[in-house]
Length: 169
Picture (tube, rainbow, N blue to C red):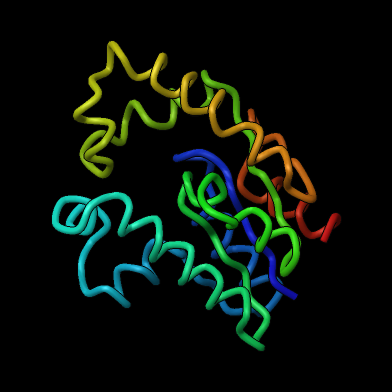
């Protein structure tokens, strides 16, 4: 069994994935961390030195590698992962997927205090952040909505979200 968590930046994929994997006694893999280890570069360095096309190609290859492992795992994806190549098709065929869905306001509230940890947010600027989130969510929703399950994250604790996933898996 592979459980894949997807959704927009700051939706809680990594935090929830770690807790869920402990409760299920499964390996946890954060795709971005996996890519960084394999490529020996951070995600921003990969974008800067090799470009987005290279990154997206490698992201798809590493996603498929993880989905094809014999071991069961909880895998958290980058926000854009489902939106490129055949990634969503692979996710649908090889895992049970959960879209951690938050409103624009929920995502904004979480991101506005994370500018130091998220360089992308810092470069966009607080005054443009809500519009940026809205645009991205609109573009990505058709991919995210293909998930097996949609979990609304607004006003829920991490444990409530984990419990909901446990019930649906």
